[in-house]
Image (cartoon, rainbow, N blue to C red; front, side, top):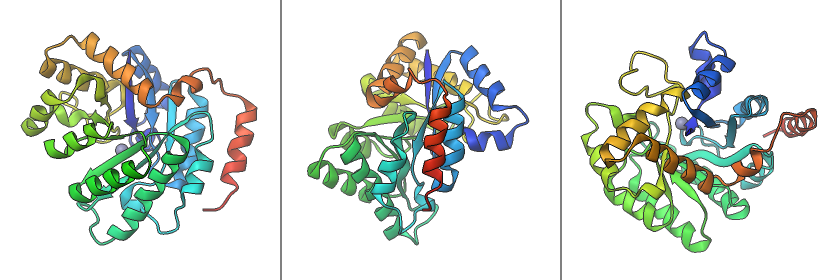
Length: 280
Ligand SMILES: [Zn+2]
């Protein structure tokens, strides 16, 4: 069994003629039994939650991407929205000075709200970091000292230095299809050194389709190419890599165990309606 720990199903459906049901069935047939669809804006959250309610294989996160960071975000909203049984993570959040270096203050504020929410409800923080290594390390280290929280660096492309710091703080690291790219030797060297019991895999679909699917729209079933690439680097079987990364996913996102028993019900849709009637 494989888990795609990070995809954007709401964005994926806009890029293909296939239905979500087709996409998820294809993933299941390829052994990808679970996936987490990631929120990047609170406006999108009701739609994301609807997808997670409809499909047993889909978990969701709630959060605001650093490039969409807003001053008014409060950890209280994140805590409230993550009460839903299928919401298992906080993010994606973090710092992205590559795409937006003019609003560092808003990004840091938003990142901190996700961390405070996690310090309160123990859901993992899903961290995106790009060209912001020192601030990412500073914020996570300081807040871990205040009160430890679970988390991961998603779509890892940073330095070995950052990886080591994060591992020391108990964080996990998620690898995307970038690992299959021709120019990713630096990342492959780092992955060789990462401990197996801290690794997760993801597609970040619809972005970053792995080799050999570069000309297609990326979808959760393609996470198997990420698994194969890492298994080769680690000199282990794909089966072993699949088992370990699946175990790691359910260990880190442990609320997913509870959500596994969830079946769509009208009662939960009422919860959803109450949540979205609130203004942010
Ligand atoms: Zn993403």
